[in-house]
Length: 251
Image (cartoon, rainbow, N blue to C red; front, side):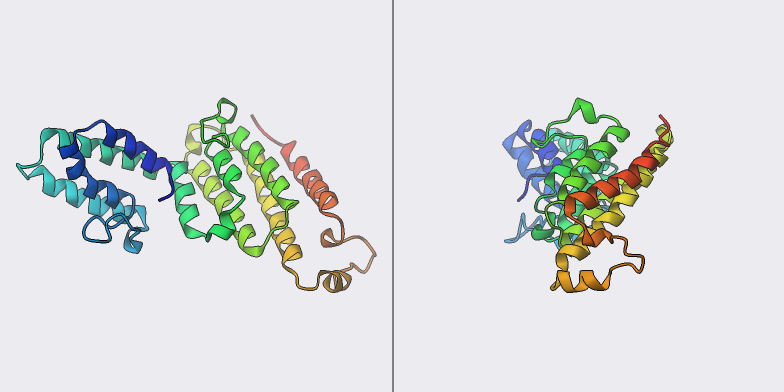
């Protein structure tokens, strides 16, 4: 299984309890991770637990049953409480959004977007929390830099969809928690503009006969279409447009 934020947090709890308590907690841990918790398929992904709310409901039922079981030790019950509180905290985090995003797209689509997913979580490439990415504004700026770099590497439609989905999840999460600080309206508008550019580049690299279709898309005035110029020129023009919006930032 791939390492995720949640598996790492659960591992910390798991390592601190006795072997007997670990056995009692395995079912709850697998449920919270969206996996089979019993039988020969234990540990494998369970599609009916894709949604976090379904995992919480089933996890609550497991805890309720074990609370009334005299064979379950106090240590096990305490560990379950910690696992539940960890899971609830996780469901409201950007880490949950990134993990869910990774499960929703094929590996070919998410390949090469790891750095962007880390930036949205405020982490460096190695997964460590970054002091320079503690604020929402810093994460927006780092994400924009990474996305502009991705534009120069040839985007398929699937990869473009994955980038846009990840950006949407981050912006939705940011807005949901924005009551604690002012909305970064200008940064969000800049980010949305960049998503439009991602679409254009995906169309460009997905064409079967790019030269033929480029000729058809010449504008009547003779001006260059964004798909008729080089990658570096197009990325530069996209940045000039979004930079004007960025000047309206309110900090």
